[in-house]
Length: 259
Image 1: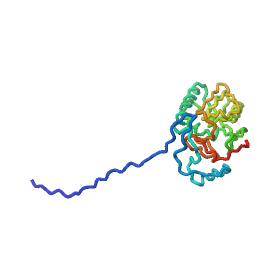
Image 2 (image 1 turned 180 degrees about the horizontal axis):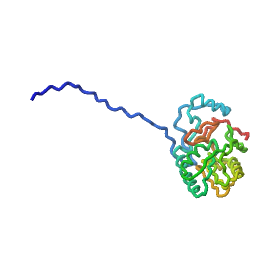
Image 3 (image 1 turned 135 degrees about the horizontal axis):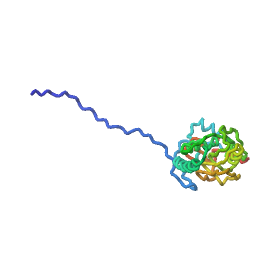
Image 4 (image 1 turned 90 degrees about the horizontal axis):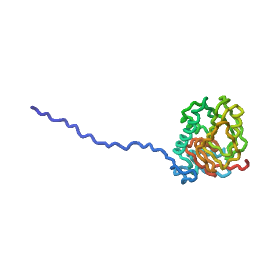
């Protein structure tokens, strides 16, 4: 037997695998009771500073041109993204149980623009036949308080005559908008009318509205008397895209007391 010398292959250096790339996500504040507030937001990068008398249009321009964070100007979080998702699921389950017993599909009417996120999340969790439409009612403009004189600026396309209608709102405070809508839908022949609102602010109620037929009142959270934004709700068309609900700092808006 002849032994041949092995070629010198050398040693390949051992390269330890580096750490996997991090895909961290910002997390919201822990869930809190409705009557308590957490500490101010931990995530603070750049703070938008506006002069107190600045108009809403100036605030919008400053935020867009200044590259500020979407949550600049938020004082504290009332309900986190997880809180919102959990509560919407509960409300949807209650609504679904009621709609399944109807002979005809209900018509879910979202009040644009504030209710668009709540409505989308809500109807995706309702396993019952339904139609969806939107109506636009204006009563705030760029201010922080309802004028008390809501007007319908874009009406429904779906026929609601003889049907059960569920009005989906982002927030019910004075009750003027809901009262206006109920009267409007009643004239269109709706057989029964329910109201499903993400937030209910009874401290601001000035108009008593009556549901129609077998209508019910559904609500996500009872909201304290603060100006809140996020999850579809805005100030000067900003903050709608926030996944949580937060209190807006007073210096971010000019409070119009003329209404």
